[in-house]
Image (cartoon, rainbow, N blue to C red; front, side):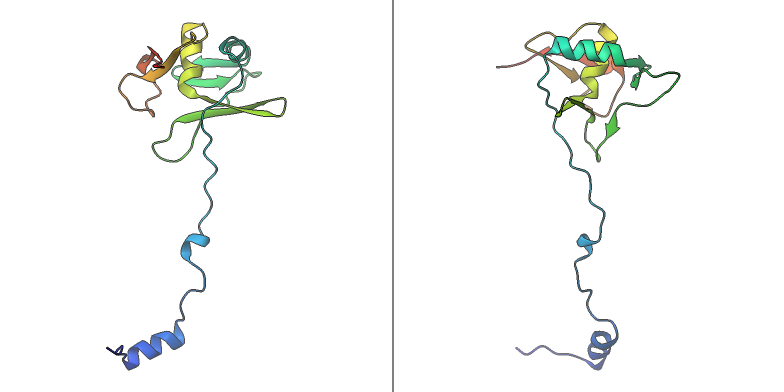
Length: 137
């Protein structure tokens, strides 16, 4: 069946040509969302965290000369807050929950355990919402 076109369609095509590139090509790119990974042992990580960070309320901050720089960043909606730093040339990515738990309890996360959110909401950063669970093998 042939396509039926009106004079209005011809007018629109002439005066308002189709956009040459898809609109998604013009949108800003989101940053690459890292996944939590580290090559440091929990003891070394705990030592680094206690030397360079502090817990105020339920947020983690850098220990600086009078500064109040927030450590964690949010990547997109529904994503966990992650902290990224480099040791040498290797990138380390740690969950905010793990840092907050270690600072709150003043000890490293024991081997074979994970820090989870008791209500299941990864955006609930309250330190009382964090609990230690045994990792299933």
